[in-house]
Length: 283
Image 1 (spheres, one colour):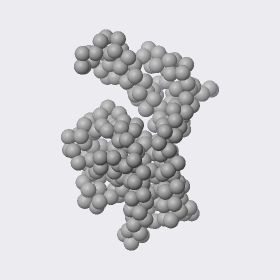
Image 2 (tube, rainbow, N blue to C red):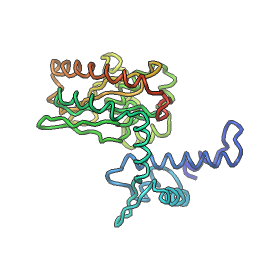
Image 3 (cartoon, rainbow, N blue to C red):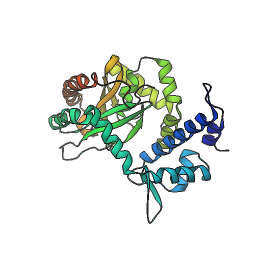
Image 4 (spheres, rainbow, N blue to C red):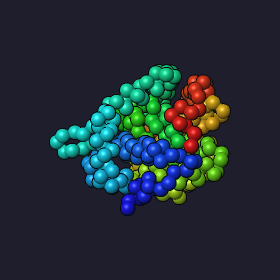
C-alpha cells in the first residue's frame, strides 16, 4: 500500500463518523493532488507523474481526476495527456482577492518598489506551511531575475520570501511542525532541499534581520523582509530578486533594503486590516 493511501486508510480522530471521515479523506486527497498540479502549472503533469508525486494508487488517482475534471478544477490537455489546474480555481482565487481587495491594494506598492530599485519584486502570502506568490512586478534592469510566477508556491524556508516568513515565527515547536508537514516534505524532496539547508538560512535570516538567499540558483540572489499582520503574526514577505552582480555589493544591497523597508511599512498597514485566517494562514 502506498504511503498516501495508507495514511488515508487510518481511522480519523475526534470522534468523526465514518461518513465524515470519508469526506475528510476525499478533501485531503484532492488538496494533495491540486497542490502537486500547482507546482507544475506551466508544463502540466502526466498521470504517471501524478502517481509518483502524490503516492496515490492508480484507482484512487483515476477517481480523483475524474471528479475534479467534472467540476472544472482539473483539465487535461491533448495530445500528450498532461493534467493542469482548471480555470474554476482561478475564479475562486479572484473571489478571495475581491473580498479584501488584497491584490488591488498591494500591487501598486510592489510595483513602485520595483520601479525604484529596477529589480523584480514580489509579495508572497503564508498559507499554512507554504508561501504563495500573490503579486509579481518584473524589474526594468537589462537582465532580470524571475525565479517565481504569480501563484507559485514555495515551502517555508525555501527561497528568500519563504525563509523570511519562517524565520519570523517565534514558536520553535511550530517550526518543527511546519518542517514535518507532508506538503512541506514533498516539496523539499522535489527540489532536493534538505532540512539542514533550511535551518542554515533560518539562523542566517535571524542574524541579518532579513533573508539573503544566494545558493538556490547560481545566477541570482533573493532578499526578503517578513511582514506582520493582525496579532503581529508573520503573514507575508516582500522580496526582491536580481542577478548576482546587482546585489552582491553591500552598499547596493543596503540601498535596496532601505527602499524595501519603506514599502514593507506600507504593506503591513494593509495586512493588519485583514483577518489572519485568510487562506488558513496559521499552521
